[in-house]
Image 1: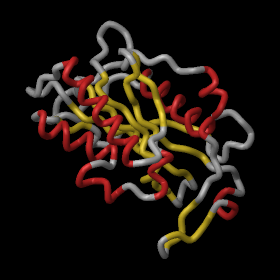
Image 2 (image 1 turned 120 degrees about the horizontal axis):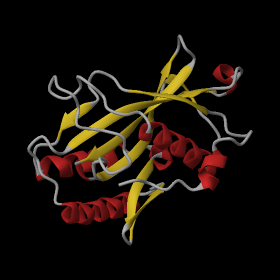
Image 3 (image 1 turned 45 degrees about the vertical axis):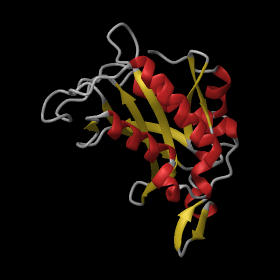
Image 4 (image 1 turned 60 degrees about the vertical axis):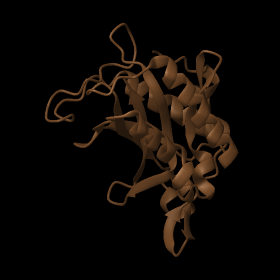
Length: 213
């Protein structure tokens, strides 16, 4: 299944007032995890959506996450600023999963890729704040900015190709996320509530998570 990216979303990441710019996408050595059962799939979805027993992870920044939802028969991408909204997406993806009827013999996986973002030259000091007793960064970003960055992450993932040696020591079954050979995408999200910082490079990264079968 391919995804259509709204041109307005792409323009959002190019606006001058966007404090982050997409840099690159990378895959670590632990990028793939097999989902072995429908129960495990529900647990993974609950974690990514910060619902159920994982709702305690949903802090104030959870509203910045971008989630895939299903409207009609088409995927859409949106924020979910409340538990009610995240529960609604969870139910929608569960129904979509029933239609896809995923198999669990090495055919349903969670992929985690890192999307890296650059700050402006003065960003380290301009956006540095103290939160929860530690130093971090706070960026004033509009919905258009965030969705624009997300669209660039998706575009980079669509052209990244296969990842070798990441799934039980064999070539991972993920190909380009488009075209005839593409796996079905059950769910996708960009977790900006758990963004990390590499001090040496002065660059931040967030997890782009994809469940495919």
